[in-house]
Amino acid sequence: MVCVAVAGASSGLGKVIADTVAAGSKHEYIILSRNLPAVPKAVQVDYNDIGGLVATLDKYQVNTVISGLSLATDEAGQNQANLIEAAKRASFTKRFIPSEYGSRWNRENIPPMPSYRGKLKAIRALEDSSLEFTTVYNSFFLDYLGVPHIPTTMPYAPNVFIDLDNRFAAIPGDGTVCFVATHTRDVGRFVVALLDLEKWEPIYTIHGSRQTMLEAVKLAEELTGSKFIVVHDSLEKLEKGEITLTPTALKMYEGNDQAIRLLTQQLSVFGGWLAEGHMDLDTSINSLNKEFPDIEPLTWRNIIETYLKK
Image 1 (cartoon, rainbow, N blue to C red):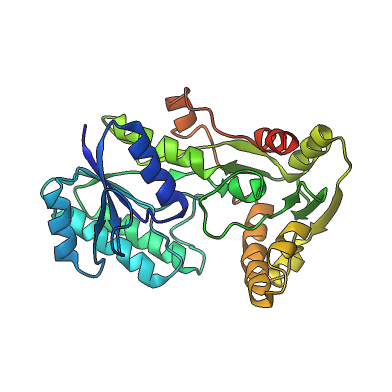
Image 2: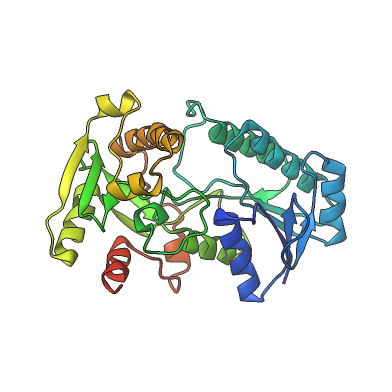
Protein backbone atom coordinates (compact mmCIF):
# COMPACT_ATOMS: atom_id res chain seq x y z
CA MET A 1 0.00 0.00 0.00
CA VAL A 2 1.27 3.45 -0.94
CA CYS A 3 -0.11 6.96 -0.71
CA VAL A 4 -1.26 8.40 -4.03
CA ALA A 5 -1.92 12.06 -4.80
CA VAL A 6 -4.38 12.75 -7.63
CA ALA A 7 -4.33 16.20 -9.24
CA GLY A 8 -7.16 17.62 -11.33
CA ALA A 9 -9.85 15.49 -9.73
CA SER A 10 -12.69 18.03 -9.70
CA SER A 11 -14.05 16.71 -12.99
CA GLY A 12 -13.17 14.77 -16.11
CA LEU A 13 -10.63 11.97 -16.14
CA GLY A 14 -9.00 13.18 -12.93
CA LYS A 15 -12.27 12.61 -11.07
CA VAL A 16 -12.57 9.13 -12.57
CA ILE A 17 -9.04 8.27 -11.41
CA ALA A 18 -9.67 9.60 -7.90
CA ASP A 19 -12.98 7.74 -7.63
CA THR A 20 -11.30 4.53 -8.82
CA VAL A 21 -8.53 4.83 -6.23
CA ALA A 22 -11.12 5.47 -3.52
CA ALA A 23 -13.33 2.54 -4.58
CA GLY A 24 -10.41 0.13 -4.54
CA SER A 25 -9.53 0.72 -0.86
CA LYS A 26 -6.06 -0.60 -1.71
CA HIS A 27 -4.05 2.59 -1.37
CA GLU A 28 -4.11 5.67 0.79
CA TYR A 29 -4.79 8.78 -1.28
CA ILE A 30 -5.25 12.52 -1.26
CA ILE A 31 -6.82 14.82 -3.84
CA LEU A 32 -4.89 17.98 -4.66
CA SER A 33 -7.37 20.84 -5.09
CA ARG A 34 -6.95 24.52 -5.87
CA ASN A 35 -10.23 25.29 -4.15
CA LEU A 36 -11.36 24.77 -0.58
CA PRO A 37 -11.76 21.02 -0.05
CA ALA A 38 -15.30 19.99 -0.96
CA VAL A 39 -14.79 16.22 -0.93
CA PRO A 40 -13.16 13.79 1.51
CA LYS A 41 -9.38 13.49 1.23
CA ALA A 42 -9.10 16.83 -0.60
CA VAL A 43 -6.14 19.05 0.30
CA GLN A 44 -6.01 22.65 -0.89
CA VAL A 45 -2.83 23.57 -2.77
CA ASP A 46 -1.43 26.48 -4.75
CA TYR A 47 0.26 25.22 -7.92
CA ASN A 48 2.30 28.42 -8.06
CA ASP A 49 3.86 27.59 -4.68
CA ILE A 50 6.33 24.78 -5.32
CA GLY A 51 7.55 24.85 -1.71
CA GLY A 52 3.98 24.43 -0.49
CA LEU A 53 3.45 21.53 -2.88
CA VAL A 54 6.59 19.84 -1.57
CA ALA A 55 5.35 20.28 2.00
CA THR A 56 2.00 18.71 1.12
CA LEU A 57 3.58 15.71 -0.62
CA ASP A 58 5.91 15.19 2.34
CA LYS A 59 3.18 15.64 4.97
CA TYR A 60 1.17 12.78 3.50
CA GLN A 61 4.25 10.76 2.48
CA VAL A 62 3.04 10.60 -1.12
CA ASN A 63 4.76 7.89 -3.14
CA THR A 64 2.98 8.39 -6.48
CA VAL A 65 1.44 11.44 -8.15
CA ILE A 66 -1.17 10.93 -10.85
CA SER A 67 -1.99 14.07 -12.80
CA GLY A 68 -5.38 14.53 -14.38
CA LEU A 69 -4.89 18.25 -14.76
CA SER A 70 -6.43 19.91 -17.76
CA LEU A 71 -3.74 21.32 -20.01
CA ALA A 72 -6.07 23.55 -22.00
CA THR A 73 -3.97 26.67 -21.29
CA ASP A 74 -0.27 27.40 -20.95
CA GLU A 75 -0.94 28.31 -17.31
CA ALA A 76 -2.37 24.84 -16.71
CA GLY A 77 0.70 23.30 -18.34
CA GLN A 78 2.89 25.29 -15.96
CA ASN A 79 0.81 24.05 -13.01
CA GLN A 80 1.71 20.49 -13.93
CA ALA A 81 5.36 21.44 -14.46
CA ASN A 82 5.40 22.94 -10.95
CA LEU A 83 3.87 19.76 -9.53
CA ILE A 84 6.59 17.70 -11.23
CA GLU A 85 9.25 19.98 -9.75
CA ALA A 86 7.69 19.52 -6.30
CA ALA A 87 7.64 15.74 -6.77
CA LYS A 88 11.34 15.85 -7.68
CA ARG A 89 12.12 17.67 -4.45
CA ALA A 90 9.78 15.70 -2.16
CA SER A 91 11.29 13.14 0.22
CA PHE A 92 8.86 10.26 -0.36
CA THR A 93 7.68 10.75 -3.95
CA LYS A 94 9.13 8.22 -6.38
CA ARG A 95 6.63 7.92 -9.25
CA PHE A 96 4.65 10.25 -11.52
CA ILE A 97 2.02 9.78 -14.23
CA PRO A 98 1.57 13.00 -16.23
CA SER A 99 -1.65 14.17 -17.82
CA GLU A 100 -1.26 12.60 -21.26
CA TYR A 101 -4.24 10.35 -22.04
CA GLY A 102 -4.64 10.89 -25.76
CA SER A 103 -2.96 10.00 -29.04
CA ARG A 104 0.79 9.61 -29.45
CA TRP A 105 2.57 12.66 -30.80
CA ASN A 106 5.95 13.60 -32.22
CA ARG A 107 7.93 15.93 -29.99
CA GLU A 108 9.75 17.27 -33.06
CA ASN A 109 6.48 18.48 -34.57
CA ILE A 110 3.94 19.10 -31.84
CA PRO A 111 0.55 20.61 -32.72
CA PRO A 112 0.45 24.38 -31.98
CA MET A 113 -1.86 23.99 -28.98
CA PRO A 114 -1.35 24.72 -25.26
CA SER A 115 -2.12 21.12 -24.30
CA TYR A 116 0.77 19.77 -26.35
CA ARG A 117 3.16 22.44 -25.15
CA GLY A 118 2.22 21.39 -21.62
CA LYS A 119 2.73 17.71 -22.42
CA LEU A 120 6.17 18.34 -23.91
CA LYS A 121 7.17 20.47 -20.92
CA ALA A 122 6.11 17.64 -18.59
CA ILE A 123 8.00 14.92 -20.45
CA ARG A 124 11.19 16.98 -20.54
CA ALA A 125 10.93 17.73 -16.82
CA LEU A 126 10.34 14.07 -15.97
CA GLU A 127 13.23 12.94 -18.16
CA ASP A 128 15.41 15.38 -16.23
CA SER A 129 14.59 13.73 -12.91
CA SER A 130 15.08 10.51 -10.95
CA LEU A 131 11.33 9.92 -10.81
CA GLU A 132 9.96 6.76 -12.36
CA PHE A 133 7.26 7.82 -14.80
CA THR A 134 5.10 6.51 -17.59
CA THR A 135 2.79 8.01 -20.19
CA VAL A 136 -0.57 6.43 -20.96
CA TYR A 137 -2.11 6.66 -24.44
CA ASN A 138 -5.78 5.87 -25.05
CA SER A 139 -6.35 8.01 -28.16
CA PHE A 140 -9.92 9.31 -28.57
CA PHE A 141 -12.33 9.32 -25.61
CA LEU A 142 -15.23 6.99 -26.35
CA ASP A 143 -17.33 9.26 -24.12
CA TYR A 144 -17.87 11.60 -27.08
CA LEU A 145 -19.52 8.88 -29.12
CA GLY A 146 -21.58 7.72 -26.14
CA VAL A 147 -23.00 11.11 -25.16
CA PRO A 148 -25.73 11.42 -23.98
CA HIS A 149 -26.43 7.71 -23.46
CA ILE A 150 -23.43 6.71 -21.32
CA PRO A 151 -22.59 8.79 -18.21
CA THR A 152 -19.39 10.81 -18.34
CA THR A 153 -17.57 13.13 -15.94
CA MET A 154 -16.10 15.13 -18.83
CA PRO A 155 -17.10 18.77 -18.25
CA TYR A 156 -17.24 19.45 -21.99
CA ALA A 157 -18.74 16.47 -23.79
CA PRO A 158 -20.57 17.17 -27.04
CA ASN A 159 -21.84 14.34 -29.21
CA VAL A 160 -19.51 13.99 -32.21
CA PHE A 161 -19.38 12.09 -35.50
CA ILE A 162 -22.10 9.48 -34.91
CA ASP A 163 -25.56 10.47 -33.65
CA LEU A 164 -27.57 7.40 -32.63
CA ASP A 165 -30.74 9.35 -31.82
CA ASN A 166 -30.94 10.89 -35.28
CA ARG A 167 -29.39 8.01 -37.25
CA PHE A 168 -26.80 10.43 -38.58
CA ALA A 169 -23.05 10.26 -39.12
CA ALA A 170 -20.60 13.05 -40.03
CA ILE A 171 -17.40 11.30 -41.05
CA PRO A 172 -14.04 13.10 -41.33
CA GLY A 173 -12.35 12.07 -44.57
CA ASP A 174 -13.31 8.88 -46.36
CA GLY A 175 -13.84 6.89 -43.16
CA THR A 176 -11.42 4.09 -44.06
CA VAL A 177 -8.74 4.95 -41.47
CA CYS A 178 -8.72 3.12 -38.13
CA PHE A 179 -9.06 5.01 -34.86
CA VAL A 180 -8.93 3.92 -31.23
CA ALA A 181 -11.51 5.05 -28.69
CA THR A 182 -11.45 4.38 -24.94
CA HIS A 183 -13.97 5.49 -22.31
CA THR A 184 -12.65 7.59 -19.42
CA ARG A 185 -14.11 5.03 -17.00
CA ASP A 186 -11.71 2.44 -18.37
CA VAL A 187 -8.74 4.78 -18.64
CA GLY A 188 -9.18 5.39 -14.91
CA ARG A 189 -9.29 1.68 -14.12
CA PHE A 190 -6.18 0.89 -16.14
CA VAL A 191 -4.22 3.84 -14.76
CA VAL A 192 -4.99 2.86 -11.17
CA ALA A 193 -4.04 -0.76 -11.94
CA LEU A 194 -0.57 0.52 -12.86
CA LEU A 195 0.02 1.24 -9.18
CA ASP A 196 0.38 -2.51 -8.58
CA LEU A 197 3.21 -2.98 -11.08
CA GLU A 198 6.69 -3.04 -9.56
CA LYS A 199 8.27 -1.48 -12.65
CA TRP A 200 6.77 0.76 -15.33
CA GLU A 201 7.49 0.84 -19.02
CA PRO A 202 8.03 4.33 -20.49
CA ILE A 203 4.69 4.18 -22.32
CA TYR A 204 1.49 2.13 -22.20
CA THR A 205 -1.44 1.87 -24.57
CA ILE A 206 -5.13 1.25 -23.87
CA HIS A 207 -7.92 0.52 -26.29
CA GLY A 208 -11.65 0.13 -25.88
CA SER A 209 -12.56 -0.08 -29.56
CA ARG A 210 -10.49 0.00 -32.72
CA GLN A 211 -12.23 0.34 -36.06
CA THR A 212 -12.74 2.67 -39.00
CA MET A 213 -15.54 5.23 -39.03
CA LEU A 214 -17.25 3.30 -41.82
CA GLU A 215 -17.11 0.14 -39.70
CA ALA A 216 -18.50 2.04 -36.71
CA VAL A 217 -21.43 3.35 -38.76
CA LYS A 218 -22.05 -0.09 -40.28
CA LEU A 219 -22.23 -1.66 -36.80
CA ALA A 220 -24.65 1.06 -35.66
CA GLU A 221 -26.85 0.38 -38.68
CA GLU A 222 -26.80 -3.37 -38.09
CA LEU A 223 -27.66 -3.15 -34.39
CA THR A 224 -30.33 -0.45 -34.74
CA GLY A 225 -31.80 -1.91 -37.91
CA SER A 226 -31.78 1.57 -39.44
CA LYS A 227 -30.01 3.20 -42.35
CA PHE A 228 -27.98 6.24 -41.28
CA ILE A 229 -27.64 9.49 -43.16
CA VAL A 230 -23.88 9.72 -43.79
CA VAL A 231 -22.02 12.94 -44.60
CA HIS A 232 -18.30 13.04 -45.40
CA ASP A 233 -16.18 16.10 -44.61
CA SER A 234 -13.13 16.34 -46.89
CA LEU A 235 -9.67 17.15 -45.59
CA GLU A 236 -9.86 20.42 -47.53
CA LYS A 237 -13.02 21.36 -45.66
CA LEU A 238 -11.52 20.39 -42.31
CA GLU A 239 -8.37 22.41 -43.02
CA LYS A 240 -10.59 25.48 -43.51
CA GLY A 241 -11.88 25.04 -39.94
CA GLU A 242 -15.23 23.67 -41.08
CA ILE A 243 -16.96 20.43 -40.08
CA THR A 244 -20.47 19.00 -40.00
CA LEU A 245 -21.92 18.85 -36.48
CA THR A 246 -24.41 16.18 -35.49
CA PRO A 247 -28.05 17.18 -34.85
CA THR A 248 -27.62 16.21 -31.19
CA ALA A 249 -24.59 18.51 -30.83
CA LEU A 250 -26.46 21.39 -32.47
CA LYS A 251 -29.38 20.84 -30.10
CA MET A 252 -27.05 20.72 -27.07
CA TYR A 253 -25.73 24.19 -27.93
CA GLU A 254 -28.86 25.63 -29.50
CA GLY A 255 -28.88 29.42 -29.18
CA ASN A 256 -25.21 29.56 -28.17
CA ASP A 257 -23.45 30.62 -31.35
CA GLN A 258 -20.14 31.09 -29.58
CA ALA A 259 -20.16 27.50 -28.30
CA ILE A 260 -21.03 26.19 -31.75
CA ARG A 261 -18.19 28.18 -33.33
CA LEU A 262 -15.74 26.90 -30.71
CA LEU A 263 -16.88 23.30 -31.16
CA THR A 264 -16.62 23.62 -34.95
CA GLN A 265 -13.10 25.03 -34.69
CA GLN A 266 -11.87 22.36 -32.26
CA LEU A 267 -13.61 19.46 -33.95
CA SER A 268 -12.32 20.38 -37.41
CA VAL A 269 -8.76 20.03 -36.08
CA PHE A 270 -9.54 16.79 -34.31
CA GLY A 271 -11.43 15.48 -37.34
CA GLY A 272 -8.42 16.18 -39.51
CA TRP A 273 -6.20 14.18 -37.16
CA LEU A 274 -8.66 11.30 -37.21
CA ALA A 275 -8.94 11.34 -41.01
CA GLU A 276 -5.15 11.28 -41.36
CA GLY A 277 -4.74 8.33 -38.98
CA HIS A 278 -3.32 10.18 -35.99
CA MET A 279 -6.03 8.81 -33.67
CA ASP A 280 -4.93 5.24 -34.25
CA LEU A 281 -2.61 3.39 -31.85
CA ASP A 282 -0.34 0.41 -32.18
CA THR A 283 -2.16 -1.54 -29.49
CA SER A 284 0.59 -4.15 -29.34
CA ILE A 285 2.93 -1.69 -27.62
CA ASN A 286 2.87 -2.30 -23.85
CA SER A 287 -0.86 -2.95 -23.94
CA LEU A 288 -2.56 -2.55 -20.58
CA ASN A 289 -5.43 -4.60 -21.99
CA LYS A 290 -3.02 -7.56 -22.13
CA GLU A 291 -1.39 -6.68 -18.81
CA PHE A 292 -4.75 -6.59 -17.03
CA PRO A 293 -7.08 -8.95 -18.94
CA ASP A 294 -9.65 -8.91 -16.12
CA ILE A 295 -10.45 -5.27 -16.96
CA GLU A 296 -13.02 -5.40 -19.74
CA PRO A 297 -13.35 -1.97 -21.35
CA LEU A 298 -16.44 -0.53 -22.94
CA THR A 299 -16.60 -0.86 -26.70
CA TRP A 300 -18.59 0.94 -29.38
CA ARG A 301 -20.83 -2.14 -29.53
CA ASN A 302 -21.50 -1.79 -25.81
CA ILE A 303 -22.44 1.86 -26.31
CA ILE A 304 -25.00 0.99 -28.99
CA GLU A 305 -26.43 -1.92 -27.01
CA THR A 306 -26.84 0.29 -23.94
CA TYR A 307 -28.60 2.88 -26.08
CA LEU A 308 -31.01 0.28 -27.47
CA LYS A 309 -31.99 -0.87 -23.97
CA LYS A 310 -33.31 2.57 -23.05
